[in-house]
Length: 126
Image (tube, rainbow, N blue to C red):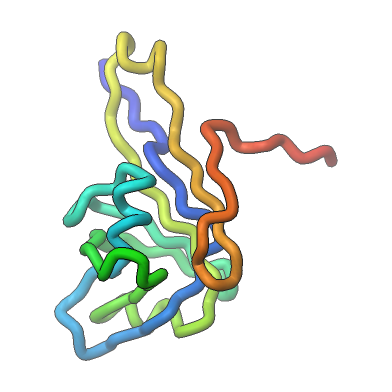
């Protein structure tokens, strides 16, 4: 049996571009893709913190070190420059793989610089 799990999460990234005329996808700084383990053309979910909107697209590689998070094509109607987003990638794992599985969680400052990473989402007290 396979279980779909969170593979990687890019938390509170700032949208740097919103390109309606582009064919589609979300361009992400290549260094961030490499660090998180998200592959070019991999399906991603984007959650817009500002609007609550959620949509599916795929990642493409932007220039390394650029800090780019560009939402393109029809998805540009769902996220504007300056919006805060969460980008998630999921993968299917078998039972054996799950024994050692931990997601990669990456956190950003307002300039899309990585502040820290983790493999566990912190639990907040109620």
